[in-house]
Length: 341
Image 1 (cartoon, rainbow, N blue to C red):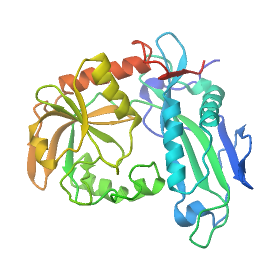
Image 2 (image 1 turned 45 degrees about the horizontal axis):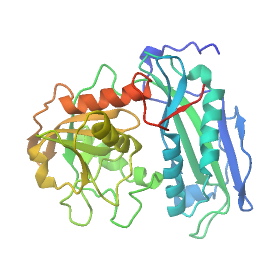
Image 3 (image 1 turned 60 degrees about the horizontal axis):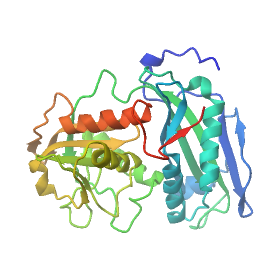
Image 4 (image 1 turned 60 degrees about the vertical axis):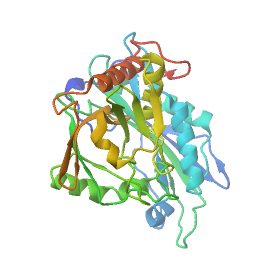
């Protein structure tokens, strides 16, 4: 298929409408077969459950063109499983895992002309999401739901190269210990918006949230998990029941152990330890790893030895290995790459 006439090398990280999107409706206790449609508009009641009580969840993933010309996506089964967990916590019907992966494949195939070419630095972002669609005025779950997937080509998250971030330890709480921090609910992101806008106004790139119960342990940012590297080369990631189980973070830990031979550890990470780490990064779908150069704790600066000029050496190896797997330059573990075309 001929590619769209897009300046792939200058794409930003924003929305560009593509030709088709997948839509399936849940009604009378069952999902319909779903369709691909050119209509990008969502029409729902003014009293829809999503508008009244924020009953919605979503996923984020990408399709890539590999070095050998295939179009692939990365571990979509884990996105399906994570959305299932989100749906169960929000009293929403689960969209079956096999149907989820099949819908992702169909949507990418229908928008093949928008999948950026290999070497452009761009990818096709895929956004599956679900919401309560019928009128709900009492505080209760909706009875009807819509599951949708749209795609949009996006450029590199960091235009002009990666620069280590300066982040602050935030006074706001991201999630309660028994709340919804472990699922990808829209409401979690809504409550983080004020905190990130405030951080930007104060000159910081991101927030570091601590646990709400004791405010002594590192959790995550508004949209990414943390990884840390100790001075003796161990890769450490925070363990908590109130952070999102990042697919990128879980994959990086496998890469660290099985590809790079590093020791890995998932455990509680205390704020007091931050000064002792050699490297830090934020990991997620958008940027894979965003290096952190400085953490500011209410005026006290913690400057990581990796510095503010480039990724630290271990972080860089992790980034290069995982992106190499995604782009087909390095052999992937069994089941990690879903070939679409």
